[in-house]
Amino acid sequence: MTLSLLPGAPAARGKFITLEGGEGVGKSTNLAFIQDYLRRRQISALVTREPGGTGLAEKIRALLLDKNDEPMTETAELLLVFAARAQHLRHVIEPALAQGRWVLCDRFTDATYAYQGGGRNMSVSAIAWLETLVQGNLRPDLTLLLDAPIEIGLARAKARGISDRFEEEKADFFEKIRTAYLRQAELHPERIRLIAADRPLPQVQAAIAAAIDPLLDGVSRPSIADRAE
Image (cartoon, rainbow, N blue to C red; front, side):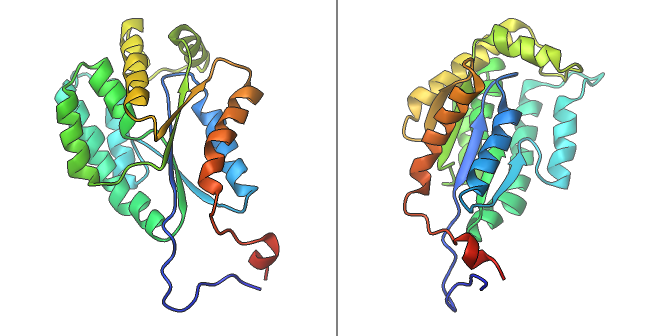
């Protein structure tokens, strides 16, 4: 039988999970783990990323990451990040959540506080103003912050090969980013779960699963039999 809603019944709003962290903390590996963890519980999550997620936002991402002949100002960088986010929210994230889908996003606004606020020393109040302008009241239901000493993360990132404009910054830049991320975790303990990412992978993923499980409580999910034709 095919699962269907009662006529006229609105879909329950989906959950919004973001994955954060500096360079080389294992976001890609653990993003795939989270997607599979949810799938095994009959939840198909829309996986996306920032900056990016739409055709226009991906073009903005390329501008942000490419090593341009013309140096990019900090203000231009910040505004481009939020321009991409505005497109992403309007065309991908908000429609999916409204339809009852879960959204799993590789970085979101906490990254702006970390990279532009911490790394670039930009005004946190300016970032907060743009956050409200672009997002309104929308915030993630859960943010998983993968944290590791920067020497570990940078060594992992270097092993990947080709670096982008951000990855070529000095170690001090990444220390500021880590400090800003940890500050976000202190400011928003109800939303952000700090995950020590310098442990063996099974331990990291066990901590991630434990952080996600409370979101699953009370969520109505179709059984495998109900989903089958």
